[in-house]
Length: 95
Length: 156
Image 1 (spheres, rainbow over the protein chains, first blue to last red):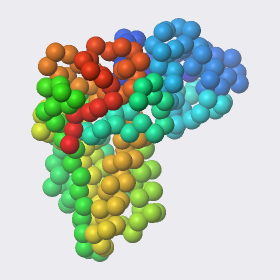
Image 2: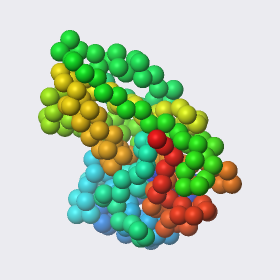
Image 3: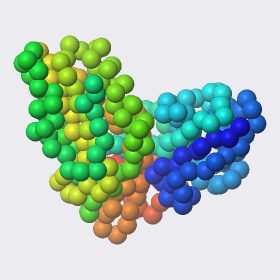
């Protein structure tokens, strides 16, 4: 199956592009997509604990099963608004 | 119909307040987040926002629907700006009208907290001497910001 994978913020900047088309076997899960990405670029290994994934504009977990034609967005730590960030759903490597 | 939106233009709070006007409202709470001049000792030149627009809007709609379930409110509107937001200008504005003040204030507080947690929006701080994406990933990736780098922000 073929996925459209979107990159934002620091990921977009480091990769130098906004999206990729990625082929995965039928039945692949989000974890498989992340493993595929990690194999392609260091940025996904380094940031693995901090990245969330949205499929078709909804946050999903690693076990979510992907389907042909899905739009998967790799979401670095969000920082909307103007105040201090809230880090409730992302892991931090320092306190 | 949703009053929420993403914009690349300057935010006009007065029009947002107008948008949530309601004959049953006795209170309207507003929140405005603006670009602050200093952040973690850095002299901020400007902030630059990027968003996954369609999903950000979907998340805004979920947030305002949840606020309407949890508090007795009339209307709520959330607007976020993308692109460069100069010093002193607003990146985000929220307005909530309600019959009574406590509900409008609490719902408004909830909305800005939830936005910062879930909305797929990212800011890059341009400061004197460099730039950094705000968020912990920047730390992992050894971005060249002085001090702690990532997690702070330049706002209210």
